[in-house]
Length: 238
Image 1 (cartoon, rainbow, N blue to C red):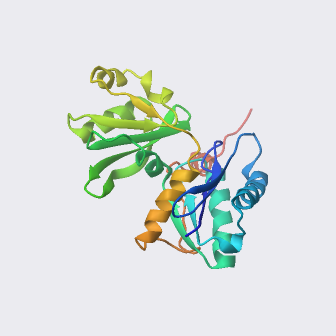
Image 2: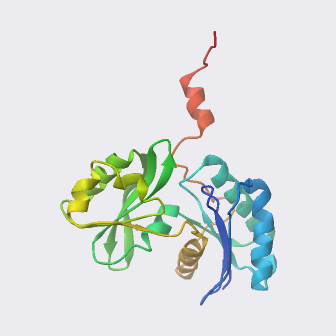
Image 3: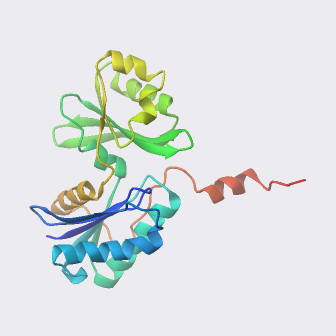
């Protein structure tokens, strides 16, 4: 099975083509170019580098958030269009789940987070079970120190595996000192997430868990700026 994976949740996006046994090609977003102009050429480069055409792709795996409104929207809108045109299946993958899946073994609890800007992180807490990870509660956008405290409450005194692309967001927080004294660290992994998103997509497809173009939806976690400003009401200048 061939899966095309896309992550446009923040400025460090990527695309990847994967088969059942291997990652075939990865293209990372390493410039300031808008996704609206970068994505299609990057996908073309990815497919050509894999010796593939879009018709040979069996399904798509798309990062559905959390992340920037514009980035997530560009990625999902593009995948929806392909799914409709080619009649392919889609797997929506949480970017935080794609992080948590890579966390080192050894604890029952995993805390995954990324920089959400504005002195906040996008975060989620997971518990390991016999078959994988179970998310506890909703994904959240929260102050870094508060996320550390919230994760500690979930773990109820037990050790936590922390994983992120942005470790610096929490390690300077006062709340982190208690975790550091327990010998805990934040595993810092690559921001190129499309390969792991593709692997999760392949596993979901093998289990019969997928969606279609109509049902594909984003999980922004944070409301778009336009909605926030609208709810605040008009601001009048002097």
